[in-house]
Amino acid sequence: MSAHLASLHPTDPDWSAFLNRVIEEFDCNTGTLHRLDAADLHLKLVAHHGIPPQLMPVIQSIPIGKGIAGAAAERREPVELCNLQTDSSGVAKPGAKQTQVQGSLAVPVLDGDRLCGTLGIGKLTAYEFNAGEKERLIQIGREVAARLA
Image (tube, rainbow, N blue to C red; front, side, top):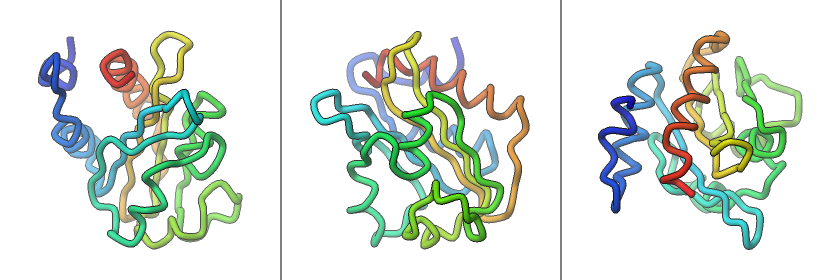
């Protein structure tokens, strides 16, 4: 059992503390954790760190397929932007630039094949996450998926 999972209280997980540990492990500055709401197929914000207040209304509920987190949920695979500030792919929403994040990575939180949410991290510098880092973030998501659902 990883330290991330072991530190979560079984009945009342401290998702903010969990997210902060993930951000620290990856030497990042920002992070979000969303839970899938099966009723409306939106990702609902569970925990966040380093997100500007003006973006909070936008990230509270994200439709599947919209933005970086929504794309990771829809594709069920990591979505990475080396530099969100200069990205022209259309994946990131225009307001996302207000985070000042450059290198960003969002992964689906999966319990087997079942989507439970998304986990995202970001750096304030341009950065390409390597395959090992992507796999590690996916694994952390898998470890907490059942508790998040």
